Amino acid sequence: MRKLALFLLTLSFLSCKKDPSYGPHNLKNGQEVELLVDHRYGAEKDILIKLPENVPAGAYLAGFEQREPGFSYRVRAKFHHDDDPPQDSSSDSFEFLRITSKEQYKGTESFDIQLIVSYVPGGPTIRLNKTGNDYYFIPDKLQLNAANNTVAGQLEEIWQNVKEIRADWKLKPKWKAIKATVTHNPQKFGKAYLVQQIQFTL
Image (cartoon, rainbow, N blue to C red; front, side, top):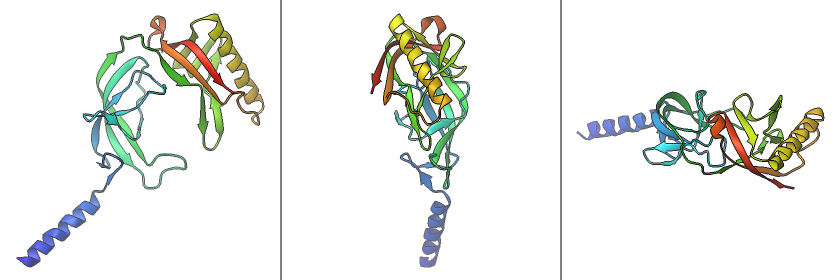
């Protein structure tokens, strides 16, 4: 009986070793979870939430190409852990599987996006592109429309700095940070943010 108990204990220990868990939520490789994706695409408060606990998921979501700004989603995703991730990449991630619900945001509350992000290696980068007369926060996906002439002039000033940097890779942005306060543009909902104000930090 004692030998049987020892055998079962050893078997249980080996089973645990075969199925390790990772991250703040102790998830197993390949475990399927439900996540909440915010309507504020690319914003400071664009935080992936794990359901049903309603806590930060602690990893990024890959492969969700159908995502549209202005919509909140519940999605199913598969957790992945990489013991040897690429340099400067997280060891934990979620792989998008399918949408379980999609809801359009009906409010008018403003939120902030950062137009300068830092990459390692690479340093600070301005997140602004221009095609014709249109400014883009995310190329070919999410426009930035000026709410007034002041903002229009500021966007053009930022774009001129982007062009200077692209012409001489040794140059850095003129500012340490650029914060844009935006709302969803009702005229181009899901395609554009309406920029209400831009704040520069030198």
